[in-house]
Length: 313
Ligand code: DAS
Image (cartoon, rainbow, N blue to C red):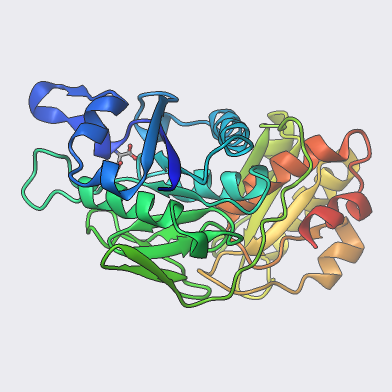
């Protein structure tokens, strides 16, 4: 039987509003019929919080812990987590956890006290995926509502529906049929960013019609060590932000650009040449921000555009 370690962190899957509290992980696991038939389970509580209270540093530490667990006699790791920031944590896991063993995050859109509660099924399916040899070498995954999504692409797309996640860039990576994962995309190993720490002072600015440079300048004035800008379409920006980009360049604050669209790459050659901006590739601003935190730590003192581009290639 496969060995799966479950790290619990809180979220709606642990919420018990009727009792006015959030349950500890052992109580969450106790609500799942068939869990111990799916794998040999070890449980470890990482924290008990709503995911709005998760920070990038907590996500990083969670990833490091998952990596430590996976270096032992374990086949896979499952993490229970609130859904609100799950798309960020799963991408952090994707960048931090080395090796081919599955790491799977899951949660619930309905508490255990609600009609149609989804937590128990989601957790069971996450364990079934983590226990499967088919799930190796696929990066960190999110399992919810019978769907499997890759951490690189997944986003929360609905605030209340149990089908709360989507992967706009490529669709779901697979589904759980019965008790078995079925994958629609080929294996693709994780490529961890070689960072022993993170630099958390990274801000995210979304461009909108008529935007000027006030927010970007406020980031620099507020001590940001890096800024991610979600640009329009394939890479267009209102002229009003250009002085802000120049200020970043002069202050040595790397600016990473991704699209504000749900999916797609950007072409920012002119902004790269003029202001040293970095093309973040095809990912959301939320994910690019976490990647920049790791890149800044991994880069050490050399945070010039050429060096930083290596982490987004
Ligand atoms: N309770 C919210 C959270 O912790 C939502 C959820 O888990 O679905 O993210």
